[in-house]
Length: 295
Ligand code: NAP
Image 1: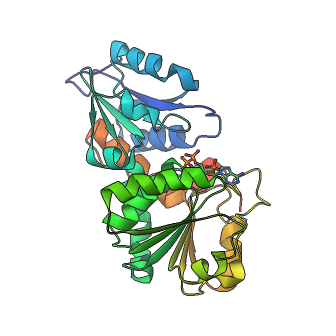
Image 2 (image 1 turned 180 degrees about the vertical axis):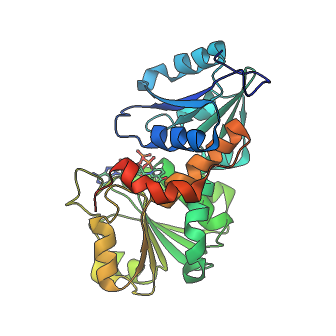
Protein backbone atom coordinates (compact mmCIF):
# COMPACT_ATOMS: atom_id res chain seq x y z
CA UNK A 1 0.00 0.00 0.00
CA UNK A 2 1.25 3.50 -0.82
CA UNK A 3 0.27 6.58 1.16
CA UNK A 4 -0.19 7.72 4.74
CA UNK A 5 -1.06 5.06 7.27
CA UNK A 6 -0.79 4.62 11.02
CA UNK A 7 1.11 1.40 10.38
CA UNK A 8 4.74 2.03 9.35
CA UNK A 9 5.06 -1.59 8.17
CA UNK A 10 1.98 -1.47 5.92
CA UNK A 11 2.40 1.86 4.15
CA UNK A 12 5.23 3.02 1.95
CA UNK A 13 6.03 6.66 2.74
CA UNK A 14 6.21 8.53 -0.55
CA UNK A 15 8.19 11.77 -0.63
CA UNK A 16 10.05 13.69 -3.29
CA UNK A 17 11.38 16.88 -4.74
CA UNK A 18 9.50 19.41 -6.87
CA UNK A 19 11.92 21.49 -8.91
CA UNK A 20 12.71 22.68 -12.41
CA UNK A 21 15.27 21.78 -13.63
CA UNK A 22 15.86 18.74 -11.44
CA UNK A 23 18.22 16.35 -13.18
CA UNK A 24 21.28 17.23 -11.07
CA UNK A 25 19.62 16.88 -7.66
CA UNK A 26 21.37 14.73 -5.04
CA UNK A 27 18.37 14.64 -2.70
CA UNK A 28 16.92 11.30 -3.96
CA UNK A 29 20.17 9.46 -3.25
CA UNK A 30 20.49 11.06 0.21
CA UNK A 31 16.93 10.27 1.34
CA UNK A 32 16.75 6.81 -0.23
CA UNK A 33 20.16 5.86 1.24
CA UNK A 34 19.05 7.09 4.69
CA UNK A 35 15.79 5.11 4.49
CA UNK A 36 17.66 2.00 3.41
CA UNK A 37 20.21 2.40 6.20
CA UNK A 38 17.44 2.70 8.83
CA UNK A 39 15.16 0.06 7.27
CA UNK A 40 12.35 2.59 6.78
CA UNK A 41 9.87 1.95 3.97
CA UNK A 42 10.33 5.38 2.35
CA UNK A 43 10.89 6.32 -1.27
CA UNK A 44 11.96 9.76 -2.48
CA UNK A 45 11.34 10.69 -6.12
CA UNK A 46 12.41 13.68 -8.23
CA UNK A 47 9.49 15.42 -10.00
CA UNK A 48 10.25 17.98 -12.71
CA UNK A 49 7.47 20.53 -12.15
CA UNK A 50 7.22 23.61 -14.38
CA UNK A 51 6.87 26.99 -12.62
CA UNK A 52 3.14 27.30 -13.43
CA UNK A 53 2.33 23.74 -12.29
CA UNK A 54 3.21 23.93 -8.59
CA UNK A 55 -0.41 24.29 -7.46
CA UNK A 56 -1.48 21.26 -9.57
CA UNK A 57 1.37 19.20 -8.15
CA UNK A 58 0.40 20.09 -4.58
CA UNK A 59 -3.26 19.28 -5.23
CA UNK A 60 -2.20 15.89 -6.59
CA UNK A 61 -0.04 15.34 -3.52
CA UNK A 62 -3.09 15.72 -1.27
CA UNK A 63 -5.22 13.41 -3.40
CA UNK A 64 -2.51 10.73 -3.53
CA UNK A 65 -1.68 10.87 0.17
CA UNK A 66 1.97 11.69 -0.48
CA UNK A 67 3.67 12.44 2.85
CA UNK A 68 5.72 15.39 1.81
CA UNK A 69 7.87 17.21 -0.69
CA UNK A 70 11.03 19.21 -0.80
CA UNK A 71 10.69 22.22 -3.08
CA UNK A 72 13.59 23.88 -4.81
CA UNK A 73 14.36 26.25 -7.68
CA UNK A 74 12.08 27.99 -8.76
CA UNK A 75 9.26 27.09 -6.33
CA UNK A 76 10.54 28.11 -2.88
CA UNK A 77 8.78 31.48 -2.72
CA UNK A 78 5.59 30.37 -4.47
CA UNK A 79 5.31 27.40 -2.12
CA UNK A 80 4.62 29.78 0.79
CA UNK A 81 1.24 30.51 -0.84
CA UNK A 82 0.14 26.93 -1.52
CA UNK A 83 0.46 25.51 2.01
CA UNK A 84 -2.10 25.89 4.82
CA UNK A 85 0.41 26.87 7.53
CA UNK A 86 3.93 28.27 7.60
CA UNK A 87 6.32 27.31 10.36
CA UNK A 88 8.27 30.29 11.78
CA UNK A 89 11.44 29.96 9.70
CA UNK A 90 9.50 29.58 6.45
CA UNK A 91 7.43 32.63 7.30
CA UNK A 92 10.40 34.84 8.17
CA UNK A 93 12.56 33.78 5.21
CA UNK A 94 9.59 33.93 2.82
CA UNK A 95 10.69 30.56 1.41
CA UNK A 96 9.58 26.94 1.83
CA UNK A 97 11.92 24.03 1.07
CA UNK A 98 9.91 21.28 2.84
CA UNK A 99 6.18 20.52 2.89
CA UNK A 100 4.55 18.06 5.29
CA UNK A 101 1.13 16.63 4.40
CA UNK A 102 -0.74 15.78 7.58
CA UNK A 103 -3.91 14.12 6.24
CA UNK A 104 -4.59 16.91 3.76
CA UNK A 105 -3.33 19.81 5.89
CA UNK A 106 -0.05 21.15 4.50
CA UNK A 107 2.63 22.87 6.57
CA UNK A 108 5.61 24.64 4.98
CA UNK A 109 9.06 24.57 6.62
CA UNK A 110 12.49 25.96 5.75
CA UNK A 111 15.16 23.45 6.74
CA UNK A 112 17.86 25.39 4.83
CA UNK A 113 18.08 27.57 7.98
CA UNK A 114 18.96 24.67 10.30
CA UNK A 115 21.09 23.18 7.52
CA UNK A 116 23.25 26.29 7.30
CA UNK A 117 23.26 26.82 11.08
CA UNK A 118 24.49 23.31 11.91
CA UNK A 119 27.11 23.36 9.15
CA UNK A 120 28.50 26.76 10.22
CA UNK A 121 28.29 26.14 13.98
CA UNK A 122 31.78 24.55 14.36
CA UNK A 123 33.31 27.78 12.96
CA UNK A 124 31.14 30.25 14.91
CA UNK A 125 33.98 31.63 17.06
CA UNK A 126 35.39 33.22 13.91
CA UNK A 127 32.29 35.27 13.04
CA UNK A 128 29.82 35.29 15.96
CA UNK A 129 28.56 38.86 16.57
CA UNK A 130 30.64 40.28 13.72
CA UNK A 131 30.18 41.40 10.08
CA UNK A 132 29.12 39.08 7.22
CA UNK A 133 29.19 39.28 3.44
CA UNK A 134 26.74 37.24 1.37
CA UNK A 135 27.05 36.72 -2.38
CA UNK A 136 23.56 36.27 -3.88
CA UNK A 137 20.08 37.38 -2.88
CA UNK A 138 17.83 34.42 -3.68
CA UNK A 139 16.14 31.77 -1.56
CA UNK A 140 19.26 30.34 0.05
CA UNK A 141 20.63 33.84 0.76
CA UNK A 142 17.44 34.59 2.72
CA UNK A 143 17.90 31.44 4.84
CA UNK A 144 21.55 32.37 5.45
CA UNK A 145 20.66 35.97 6.44
CA UNK A 146 18.10 34.68 8.94
CA UNK A 147 20.54 32.15 10.41
CA UNK A 148 23.36 34.69 10.71
CA UNK A 149 21.10 37.13 12.58
CA UNK A 150 19.07 34.75 14.74
CA UNK A 151 21.67 32.06 15.55
CA UNK A 152 25.00 33.86 15.22
CA UNK A 153 24.12 37.40 16.34
CA UNK A 154 25.83 38.94 13.30
CA UNK A 155 25.69 42.76 13.52
CA UNK A 156 26.14 43.88 9.92
CA UNK A 157 25.47 42.15 6.59
CA UNK A 158 26.73 43.12 3.14
CA UNK A 159 24.74 41.62 0.28
CA UNK A 160 26.55 41.50 -3.07
CA UNK A 161 24.35 40.56 -6.01
CA UNK A 162 24.34 40.71 -9.81
CA UNK A 163 20.86 42.30 -9.74
CA UNK A 164 20.94 45.09 -7.17
CA UNK A 165 17.14 45.36 -7.09
CA UNK A 166 16.84 41.77 -5.79
CA UNK A 167 19.37 42.57 -3.07
CA UNK A 168 17.36 45.67 -2.15
CA UNK A 169 14.17 43.57 -1.92
CA UNK A 170 15.88 41.10 0.43
CA UNK A 171 17.17 43.92 2.63
CA UNK A 172 13.74 45.60 2.68
CA UNK A 173 12.20 42.30 3.78
CA UNK A 174 14.67 41.84 6.67
CA UNK A 175 14.68 45.51 7.75
CA UNK A 176 10.98 45.08 8.51
CA UNK A 177 11.80 42.07 10.74
CA UNK A 178 15.05 43.40 12.28
CA UNK A 179 14.94 47.22 12.18
CA UNK A 180 18.10 47.45 14.34
CA UNK A 181 20.26 45.42 11.90
CA UNK A 182 22.74 47.13 9.62
CA UNK A 183 22.49 46.04 5.96
CA UNK A 184 24.38 47.25 2.91
CA UNK A 185 23.87 46.20 -0.73
CA UNK A 186 26.83 46.29 -3.14
CA UNK A 187 27.40 45.55 -6.81
CA UNK A 188 30.30 43.31 -7.88
CA UNK A 189 32.26 46.20 -9.41
CA UNK A 190 31.63 48.74 -6.63
CA UNK A 191 34.74 50.55 -5.39
CA UNK A 192 33.70 50.01 -1.75
CA UNK A 193 33.80 46.23 -2.18
CA UNK A 194 37.48 45.70 -1.08
CA UNK A 195 36.97 47.51 2.25
CA UNK A 196 33.66 45.76 2.85
CA UNK A 197 35.29 42.38 2.17
CA UNK A 198 38.24 43.20 4.44
CA UNK A 199 35.84 44.00 7.30
CA UNK A 200 33.85 40.72 6.93
CA UNK A 201 34.51 37.78 9.25
CA UNK A 202 32.35 35.41 7.21
CA UNK A 203 31.87 35.26 3.43
CA UNK A 204 29.14 32.99 2.00
CA UNK A 205 28.53 32.16 -1.66
CA UNK A 206 24.76 31.74 -2.12
CA UNK A 207 24.90 31.62 -5.94
CA UNK A 208 25.44 28.66 -8.30
CA UNK A 209 28.64 30.28 -9.65
CA UNK A 210 31.38 27.63 -9.87
CA UNK A 211 29.00 24.67 -9.76
CA UNK A 212 29.79 21.65 -11.97
CA UNK A 213 30.25 21.82 -14.96
CA UNK A 214 31.20 25.54 -14.74
CA UNK A 215 34.04 24.83 -12.35
CA UNK A 216 36.33 27.47 -13.85
CA UNK A 217 34.06 30.25 -12.50
CA UNK A 218 34.10 32.05 -9.15
CA UNK A 219 32.25 35.18 -7.94
CA UNK A 220 34.21 38.21 -9.13
CA UNK A 221 35.61 39.54 -5.86
CA UNK A 222 38.85 41.29 -4.84
CA UNK A 223 40.05 38.14 -3.01
CA UNK A 224 43.34 39.84 -2.09
CA UNK A 225 41.27 42.00 0.31
CA UNK A 226 39.85 39.00 2.19
CA UNK A 227 40.73 38.89 5.88
CA UNK A 228 42.89 35.71 6.29
CA UNK A 229 41.14 35.12 9.63
CA UNK A 230 37.69 35.01 7.96
CA UNK A 231 35.56 31.89 7.47
CA UNK A 232 34.50 31.26 3.85
CA UNK A 233 31.50 29.03 3.10
CA UNK A 234 30.38 27.92 -0.37
CA UNK A 235 26.83 26.52 -0.60
CA UNK A 236 27.94 24.78 -3.78
CA UNK A 237 29.02 21.16 -3.09
CA UNK A 238 29.94 19.89 -6.56
CA UNK A 239 32.89 20.15 -7.02
CA UNK A 240 33.90 19.57 -3.39
CA UNK A 241 36.53 22.32 -3.65
CA UNK A 242 35.27 25.14 -5.84
CA UNK A 243 37.46 27.85 -7.35
CA UNK A 244 35.85 30.23 -4.81
CA UNK A 245 37.13 28.05 -1.94
CA UNK A 246 40.55 27.66 -3.59
CA UNK A 247 40.90 31.45 -3.80
CA UNK A 248 39.93 31.81 -0.13
CA UNK A 249 42.34 29.05 0.92
CA UNK A 250 45.15 30.81 -0.97
CA UNK A 251 44.59 33.83 1.30
CA UNK A 252 44.70 31.58 4.38
CA UNK A 253 40.97 31.46 5.25
CA UNK A 254 39.17 28.50 6.86
CA UNK A 255 36.72 27.12 4.29
CA UNK A 256 33.69 24.81 4.00
CA UNK A 257 31.74 23.44 1.03
CA UNK A 258 27.94 22.95 0.85
CA UNK A 259 27.87 19.21 1.54
CA UNK A 260 27.25 19.46 5.30
CA UNK A 261 24.43 21.97 4.73
CA UNK A 262 22.93 19.68 2.10
CA UNK A 263 22.94 16.78 4.56
CA UNK A 264 21.60 18.80 7.50
CA UNK A 265 18.75 20.39 5.52
CA UNK A 266 17.85 16.91 4.23
CA UNK A 267 17.99 15.55 7.80
CA UNK A 268 15.50 18.21 8.90
CA UNK A 269 13.02 17.21 6.19
CA UNK A 270 13.56 13.48 6.77
CA UNK A 271 12.76 13.83 10.47
CA UNK A 272 9.62 15.87 9.75
CA UNK A 273 8.33 13.12 7.43
CA UNK A 274 9.41 10.02 9.37
CA UNK A 275 9.97 11.09 12.98
CA UNK A 276 13.41 9.43 12.66
CA UNK A 277 16.87 10.99 12.77
CA UNK A 278 18.74 10.79 9.48
CA UNK A 279 22.08 8.92 9.90
CA UNK A 280 24.09 12.01 8.92
CA UNK A 281 27.50 10.74 10.03
CA UNK A 282 27.15 7.48 8.11
CA UNK A 283 25.98 9.34 5.00
CA UNK A 284 28.82 11.86 5.28
CA UNK A 285 31.34 9.01 5.02
CA UNK A 286 29.82 7.45 1.90
CA UNK A 287 28.23 10.40 0.11
CA UNK A 288 31.15 11.75 -1.94
CA UNK A 289 31.56 8.26 -3.50
CA UNK A 290 27.81 7.73 -3.92
CA UNK A 291 27.46 11.11 -5.60
CA UNK A 292 30.67 10.75 -7.60
CA UNK A 293 31.69 14.27 -6.55
CA UNK A 294 34.60 15.84 -8.41
CA UNK A 295 37.59 17.36 -6.60
P1 NAP B 1 18.08 31.33 -6.37
O1 NAP B 1 16.99 31.64 -5.40
O2 NAP B 1 17.74 31.09 -7.78
O3 NAP B 1 19.17 32.54 -6.27
C1 NAP B 1 20.31 32.50 -7.09
C2 NAP B 1 21.22 33.69 -6.78
O4 NAP B 1 22.41 33.51 -7.51
C3 NAP B 1 20.64 35.03 -7.20
O5 NAP B 1 21.08 36.00 -6.30
C4 NAP B 1 21.25 35.24 -8.59
O6 NAP B 1 21.43 36.61 -8.89
C5 NAP B 1 22.61 34.63 -8.39
N1 NAP B 1 23.17 34.14 -9.66
C6 NAP B 1 22.74 33.07 -10.36
N2 NAP B 1 23.53 32.88 -11.44
C7 NAP B 1 24.46 33.88 -11.41
C8 NAP B 1 25.54 34.24 -12.24
N3 NAP B 1 25.84 33.53 -13.34
N4 NAP B 1 26.30 35.31 -11.91
C9 NAP B 1 26.01 36.03 -10.81
N5 NAP B 1 24.98 35.75 -9.96
C10 NAP B 1 24.23 34.67 -10.27
O7 NAP B 1 18.90 30.05 -5.89
P2 NAP B 1 19.14 29.52 -4.41
O8 NAP B 1 18.05 28.60 -4.00
O9 NAP B 1 19.45 30.69 -3.53
O10 NAP B 1 20.46 28.62 -4.64
C11 NAP B 1 21.71 29.22 -4.91
C12 NAP B 1 22.79 28.14 -4.87
O11 NAP B 1 22.88 27.59 -3.58
C13 NAP B 1 22.53 26.96 -5.82
O12 NAP B 1 23.76 26.57 -6.38
C14 NAP B 1 22.01 25.87 -4.91
O13 NAP B 1 22.33 24.58 -5.39
C15 NAP B 1 22.81 26.17 -3.64
N6 NAP B 1 22.12 25.68 -2.44
C16 NAP B 1 22.80 24.76 -1.70
C17 NAP B 1 22.21 24.27 -0.55
C18 NAP B 1 22.95 23.26 0.28
O14 NAP B 1 22.31 22.58 1.09
N7 NAP B 1 24.26 23.16 0.15
C19 NAP B 1 20.92 24.71 -0.15
C20 NAP B 1 20.27 25.65 -0.95
C21 NAP B 1 20.89 26.14 -2.10
P3 NAP B 1 20.29 37.48 -9.63
O15 NAP B 1 19.41 38.01 -8.51
O16 NAP B 1 21.04 38.52 -10.33
O17 NAP B 1 19.55 36.54 -10.55
